[in-house]
Image (cartoon, rainbow, N blue to C red; front, side, top):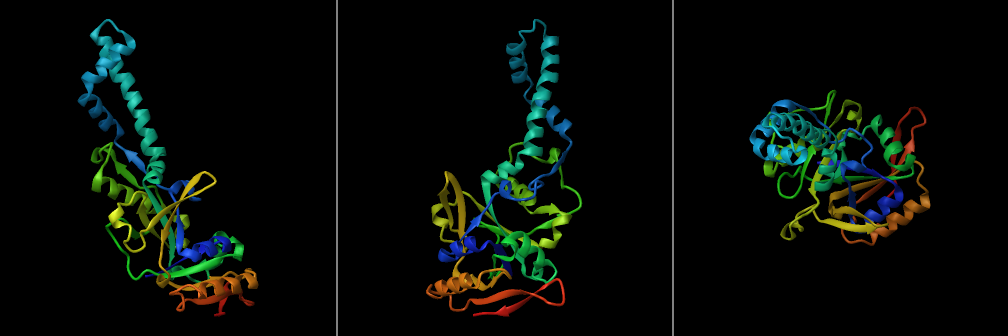
Length: 289
């Protein structure tokens, strides 16, 4: 499976020195709708919660209100704790699932090969490669791995935010249930982003020691300015080609090529330069090494 990543030149040069590429959480992305869903049937779930925990809630209500009659206590329990739980659940489901995903996994976002067209790459070079002063790295990841400590999946582009039925969900999900829900949230975006033709590699932030040697899953934390960033290793043999943007300084490009030629296992990598097509709003590519 061939896919690519557009990067600023300095970031690409740094990543290519040791083949560690930065992975991010959804709170770092440029789409404010990342990991958002719409949730229905709250009322039934919340009333069931109150029913199942009524005695505890009633006792807490007594302590809070010091009401003198059971009727007052029951009424307060039903009204106050329903609101309390509803507010907490609404905040969790509607607003902070992105934070939950952000705390749980990191994502490597790539563009699939058939997204490398003259129409779409004009936007990619401008949006993600420093207005044409950056680099495009093309990978061949062989297959789409699933399971283990990471998996890859195409992003699905929808007109409407996905709906989740709260009656079919546990408030605190664990195990496969949480993984399936997280996977759904992490791979859905609005229709406006469809031109990106994106595929995402999902990697847990905490990887068991015995699994850190798995292909493409060596997650490495690094501190910078007091903030922890995460990187994943992708070996040189998975890199097929490096394209320089149309506005990359030639001296910079030559220096990067020479540096990479001294690294073991990089002899197969081809280097190309994107150039403005004189007759259309697109790029043409010329091999440089």
